Amino acid sequence: MGAKRSVSDLKEADLKGKRVFVRVDLNVPLDDNLKITDDTRVRAAVPTIKYLMQHGAKVILSSHLGRPKGVTPKYSLKPLVPRLSELLGVEVCSSVKMADDCIGEEVQKLVATIPDGGVLLLENVRFYKEEEKNDPEFAKKLALLADLYVNDAFGTAHRAHASTEGVAKYLKPSVAGFLMQKELDYLVGAVSNPKKPFAAIVGGSKVSSKIGVIESLLEKVDILLLGGGMIFTFYKAQGHSVGSSLVEEDKLELATTLIEKAKAKGVSLLLPTDVVIADKFAADANSKLVPATAIPDGWMGLDIGPDAIKTFSEALDTTKTVIWNGPMGVFEFEKFAVGTESIAKKLAALSGKGVTTIIGGGDSVAAVEKAGLADKMSHISTGGGASLELLEGKTLPGVLALDDA
Ligand SMILES: Nc1ncnc2c1ncn2[C@@H]1O[C@H](COP(=O)(O)OP(=O)(O)O)[C@@H](O)[C@H]1O
Ligand SMILES: O=C(OP(=O)(O)O)[C@H](O)COP(=O)(O)O
Image 1: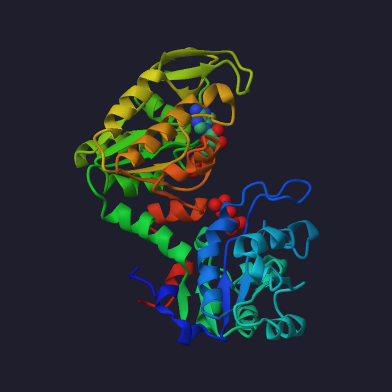
Image 2: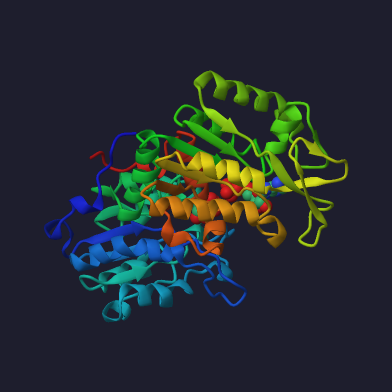
């Protein structure tokens, strides 16, 4: 996938008075009172919107929220309007309006009222099943609203949907927004051309969900640190007792192959030497520390131990680029969050010393945010699934559809 045209290539002459369809990812968590509990994605969408506003464009924002089946009030994007208005600045608040739909005559009428530099937020594009089917007729109806297209929805760029892929065929130019560009710069740029030594930390629950990432990273990294639930499949494959830890029996052979591949490629693959085990999968479980290779029956490994943290930290001290995907333990339970928190702290400290630190989406981001260290990292991805697919070396349809640079 070559470089894509960016919104920064569009100047005042290209934008003034133009209707710009901007696909953003405003799929944020809402509580029972429809309050936003994490506005990271809203904040991340702001630079592109502001740029377009400042250059006199009429900004039409489109996003999905959740996975609704048809029109579902709890998945309306209306709760996003106040925060979006706040972030875009008081003088433009009045121009953030809400269409009750995302296509059709009424929406077209509303679009016609957007002043230059104004913003309109369309209703959840997934209220139409045609969105996820990438229906060309639906994409044409979206395209009818605008003159050009900006895709800044990195978190949804792995979906070939009408608003992320189909619509790009009918609107030209079709360009990447600033967030999309930044995500690609870090997750493709820094990873394919990293300052070396380059380390990857891969954790999370299952080997099966990370095979692609591990295989792809083995081609690039000098050091690979493995943590989380997946390590027990590796230990079992090596003949160790893992008690009732998470194991994927059908992935034992694969785990052995991955260890051999790392050896053949000269990648230093480190597994935790000690683990914190629990007598049940619960926040209030009894716990103790044991060597990772000697977990007693009836106990399960839920976190990496202090010795592993020390070994991992020392290995990371030698690096210039680190990418992290997946927690080191069940960080949702306080007792088993130490490994994940320690790695987050280590990466924050390394960032301070000029090491490029990239957090590849999903639960690892939640863990870094929980530790209050998000602003210390070089880059935190806004996409879980999308960043995984990129790290696996896949091409994202939402990016592929954009104009080449
Ligand atoms: N030792 C473990 N045993 C069981 N589950 C684990 C263990 N370590 C981590 N996990 C779980 O893995 C989940 C995250 O896995 P995954 O979705 O693969 O990560 P990510 O979202 O970062 O890609 C977390 O919910 C965490 O509780
Ligand atoms: O939250 C998202 O993905 P993520 O949880 O993998 O980061 C995106 O908004 C995509 O949503 P989807 O997985 O319903 O297509």
